[in-house]
Length: 141
Image (cartoon, rainbow, N blue to C red):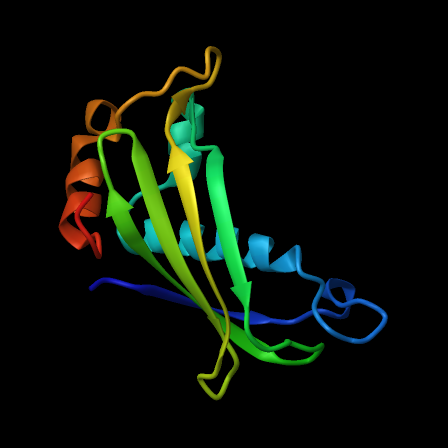
């Protein structure tokens, strides 16, 4: 299974008064991981947007297991859980430096035309990208 891994240094601004990373920052790290995965595969999300397409989140689930604190270096591991005609589900693990899992997550995305928000298949926009996702997905739809 193809996974992308991205290291992130936890910044003070990402923590709450208890010195623990605020829960919403995990979503930002997931976006960093997803972008890294796409780039590792040789594609560019920014180009999709330039071409008039967006990939909004339609569903999101995060399971928090252990807290992360300021000063840590964490890793975001990202993969394509499943990829279908209209939906792509990404999987994530956010890990402490010692490999302990701090959180797991999945996010579901649909590709849409920017102006109309009408769903469109990645196979029609970029057949190579679509084929790569189909090849590396962890589970079949």
